Amino acid sequence: MKPKYLALAALALLLGWFVYDSFSQPGVGDLKGNFQEAALYRNENNTGPIVRVYAVTVADTLWREMRQYGDFMPYTKYGNTKVYFFRQGQPAPKSVRPGSVNFDAEFDRYCLAKYEKEVMGNVTFARYPLR
Picture (cartoon, helix red, strand yellow):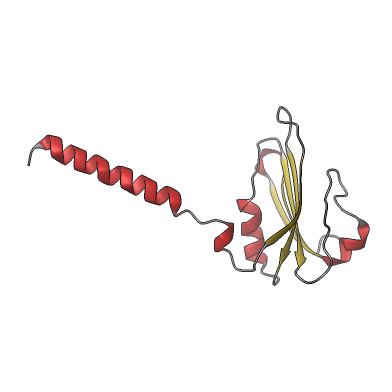
């Protein structure tokens, strides 16, 4: 075999591996817990800090899975991403807003956990944060 064909075959294998690796990355769908997004807020400011707030329902208190779910959520450097987790079948907010209080106080006692990724990527995860 000529070196030219070997190089083309190696290039094709490498390209195939890149494509496979790109499409086989883990994601939110791979997590246990049947996560369902109940509410989302994202500010429209694309030039400054981007703020994202999510309310998510989950089937069970799988703390590690909740943390991984938060890690999968979009984050922008110098921005802020908050994810609040609520048990499925219990009250959860239908809308969220920016600021220090992100939903009505009536839902505080139903909040299982809060994941927050702050400026410069600092992550905090708290169980029962509003009790």
